[in-house]
Image 1 (tube, rainbow, N blue to C red):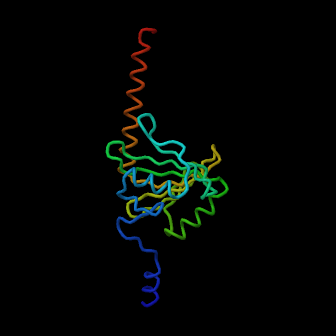
Image 2: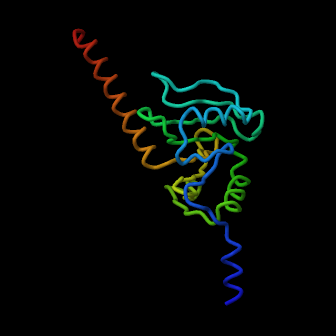
Image 3: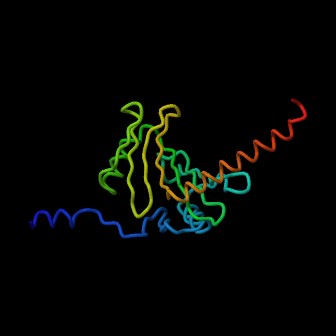
Length: 176
């Protein structure tokens, strides 16, 4: 009985609504606060989202040598955090997997067509964390996302793309 209690007390504990990235709680953060925290981390701003861009893009290599880029997207209607995706060196996958296991515990594993298509997933305080390798691009991806807000961003993006395609068809209609 005492052994079980000691084991339970030694498990990592995560309090509700307290998941942090860049030293700030991201569960309910807005665009301006997170952008400021990312800049303070030493990230180089490549591009910030606007009317034509759906996500911010940062060069993280100054402080996080294994990261090539960081993409961060927000819900365009209210500026809420939707996702952050690191593109990591392909060779860094196992090291990152072990670090994430150490911090968040055992992941759920989803396999694709091949054993190598594995996606490792954690859910911490409402934030989905996933790590996977992208063979075709020789990178690993580490993604932090809020499911509902990510779905809202994806829906809005698809609607915008459909509107753009419709406008292009209308412009070209006289030619066919």
